[in-house]
Amino acid sequence: MLKESLLLPENAVYDHVIPAGDYWIHRIGAGQVFRLVDLEGNQAVDTLFYDAVDPDNRYSANDTVLNQGALYLTTGTELVSTRGDVLATIVADTCGRHDTLGGACSRESNTMRYSLDRGHMHACRDSFIRGLQSYGHGLDKRDIACNINFFMNVPVTPEGGLSFEDGVSAPGRYVELRAERGILCLISNCPQLNNPCNAYNPTPARVLIWAGRTRPAPEMLPHLIRG
Ligand SMILES: [Zn+2]
Picture 1 (tube, rainbow, N blue to C red):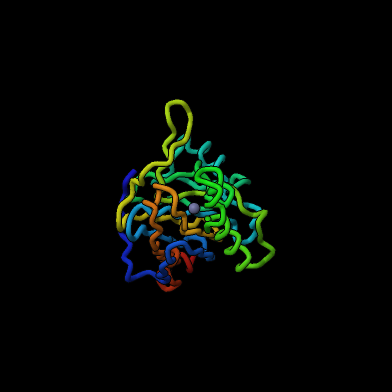
Picture 2 (cartoon, rainbow, N blue to C red; picture 1 turned 90 degrees about the vertical axis):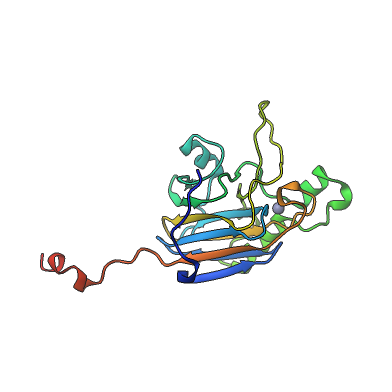
């Protein structure tokens, strides 16, 4: 469902551009709102989420799809963890559809989908591993699970297959999420050169974070303080 946000970029507490093909890993506090912007259109932003305190409790594509009874992610989708907790909720979306079935590209999929001589080409799985290793805390290859592909169009065919199609996004479209607990967000801004989902042309993505809901200062609540 298309929904615009009222938050203004100039009020963000964090503003960063992830270069085409690069990775990004960042802690996001409970209640903070973060926006991913598809700056040039049709970029696939492969994303994983973890509970920041207990990374074994991580995004589950299966439970998220089951919970909402729908295959694609958009406004209102709750991102459910392997233990059934809601890690984040999509609160605004100007693209309208995001995939969580297609998985991340890898050297192996380069070889299988395209040709043997594409096997060496950089892929999301490499970026995920580099991101986790740069973060430390014991996170590594084993912590890569099924991901979200923001801005990517992977329709399910009537026969039950998956087809990788041209993106439905466009320059400046965004998706915005509210962290429902402290989370770790790992992004591979897909470097894939062989796939129509990012128009064979990886491009940058922007991340904005706004401060969480703040409690009113005590002087604002005299009736509560005096009981
Ligand atoms: Zn990729």
